[in-house]
Length: 319
Length: 319
Image (cartoon, rainbow over all chains, first blue to last red):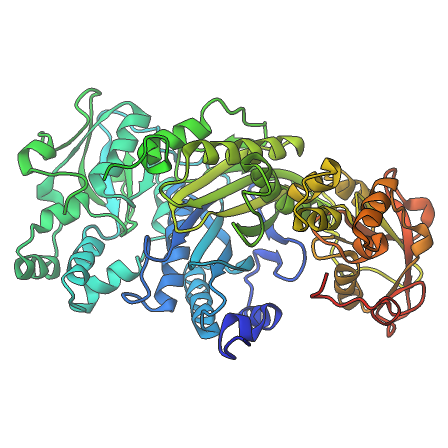
C-alpha cells in the first residue's frame, strides 16, 4: 500500500524538510542555520539561557480546537516565555516534530509556519529541528536566550516589602477553555487566547533592566505560580483583587457562562503573563501593573490577606 | 480508578521530578540548573552550538531490546555526537520525556539515569527538562556545545586531495541490529553497540584543533553520510576498503549470519562514528584512521573508485 501523496510519508522526509525550511530568513543571531549536524547561535553574553517543553496532541492542544498554525505558535510561545521570564532576550528556537506517517504534509508545514511566525514575533528564527514518525503528534521546542550582561532573574529573589506586578493577560485562556469546553467557538478574542498565548516577551528584559528581584511566567495559574516564587524566595505574597483588571470582555463571557471571572484571573493558566517583584512601585517599567505585595514568610500566597481556597472555594483540580 | 502506585501517574509529576533531579551534581558549565523557568549555561566562546533530536519508542528504540538506561544513554549520545561533529565541546543537554501515565516510574527514573550517565561521559549535565503525558514514549534531547574560539567544522569545507578519516566504530550497530532481528541476544558487544552507541566525543574538538576541513557524524551509514559531505563541499569522495578495519568480532558475526561485514561497515548507521577530512595524512590526530580520499567533483561517493551500488548491489532501504 503506497502512502497518500499529500501525507508526510508520501511526501518523504527530505522533500518535507526542504519545504518547511526553504525560503526562511534567519536573523543575525543565527550564525549557522539548519542543514549541518548542529546550528551555531550567537551568545554574546558568554552565557546562554535554555529551556525545553514538550506539547502533546490531546494533552496540550487539540487540532479540532486550534489550527495547525496556532498549535505551532503556542509550542514556541510557551518556551520563549520561559526565556523572557529569566530576563533574557530570546536568541533562537529549535523544534522537534513527531507525527503519524499519514499526517497531511500541509499540517506539518502549517505548524512550522506558526512556529516561525511566533519566533519572528520575538525577533528570532527556527535554527534547527528534527522530524520523525510517531503514533501521535508531539512537538518539542527548545528556546535559547541571551542575558545581555545582566544576572538572570530567578524565582528566588523576592523580599518582604517588594511590589508584585504583572505584564500581559490573566484569565483569558481559562475563559477560552471554558467557552470551547461548552462547544462554543466565540467570542474569538478569548478563544484565540486559549489557542495561542501572546506572551509579552519584551517585558522580561525590561523588568530585569528595572531591577526586578524575582520573575516567572504564569503557565499554571497566578496563585499556583506565585507559590513557586513564595517557596523559592521564602516569603509570603498577597494579591490585591482591587488592583486586578478584569476586562469587560472577560466579565461578559463569565456572565454568559455563569462563571466567576476573578477565579479565571487568579487560577487560570496558559496566558503566559509575566509576574515579577520590584523593590518599589517607582521601578515598574511601562506595561507592568502592580497587583499585590511581598509579605513576611509563613503566610504563603494570600488574596486580600486571606487564603483564597477557603474564602472562594477554590479547588486546584476543579473548574 | 486510581492509578497504580508505581506508575508515573501514581507517583505524581512533582514527586517524580524530585526523584529524577535529586542528588545530581551539575558540572561547572551549568550556572543555573533545573528548578526555575530556564537553565543558564556557560557559553564562553560567545557562540553556542545547538542541536535537537526526537526518539520514539518502536521507531528509534525498543524497550524489549534495550534497557531503559540504554535508551536514555542513546537519546543523549546521538545529540552530543552532533555537537562533537561541529568540532565543539559539549556543554549541556536538556531533555523532554513524554510517556503514558501507566509507565512505571522506575522506567522513567532509569531512562534519566542513562541520560545522566551519557551526559557525564561527555563531561556535561542535564540542565533542564520537561515531563509530560502521551500515548507513546517519546524522548526529545537538545545538546549544546562550545566552540572554544574555533570556527565550526561544517560539511562544506572538504577539497580534492584532502584525506578522509574516521574516529570510532563502523558497522557494529548494524551487526547488532541483524543479531537482534534474528531473535538472538549475543554477542553482547555488537548487540550493545546497537542498543547504545559510544560516540568518540573528544575526537570532534581534536579534529577541529588539527584543522579538519569538514566533519559529520555517521548516523545513517558511512556512504549515505559521506554523500552529504560530497554535496555540501561539491567534491567526490572515494573510500578505500583496504583501509577499513573489519574487526574479528564483526567477521565472526557476519559468518554466523551469512552476512557481508563490509556492507555493515559501509552502510550501517547508528554507531555515530565521526568522519572528517584533513589537508594531509600528517594532520590526523591520534584515534583517527585514514579510510579514503577526497576527489574531484562529479564522481559522487565511490568505493575503491567504483559506485558501490552497482558493484555490491547496495540498496539504501534494504538490509
